[in-house]
Image 1 (cartoon, rainbow, N blue to C red):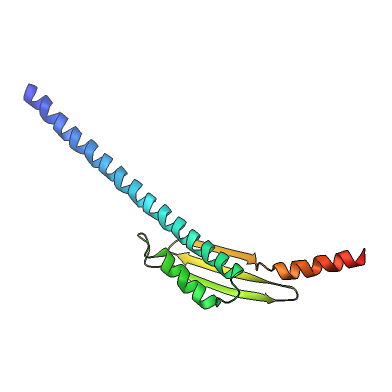
Image 2 (cartoon, rainbow, N blue to C red):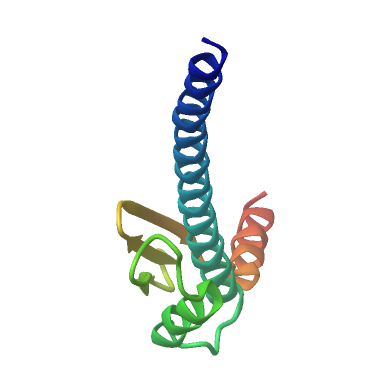
Length: 129
């Protein structure tokens, strides 16, 4: 009777161990996916900020820079970034960015940092008063 009881503990322990290892694998995959989403978001955001503040950097190089900065993701094949400048100097230029990889997608749009235009508008307001 004792041997039968000890054997049943071994079978139950093997079953519990399989469940624990499965939960661990699922947790690690979720952590890798979250890491890939954060890295892709940060690379895209940093590239947009560089393009907003640097007047000499072309937008096609910004997308390549973001892809190099993000590196290779663990969960997907690769990141796909598209960054371009839109608008004109009179109405205001803006940076439009789009990134995707696997199930992750991110779009952002930010105005170009243009302190000279802001100061010109401010002097116009001061002259009218």
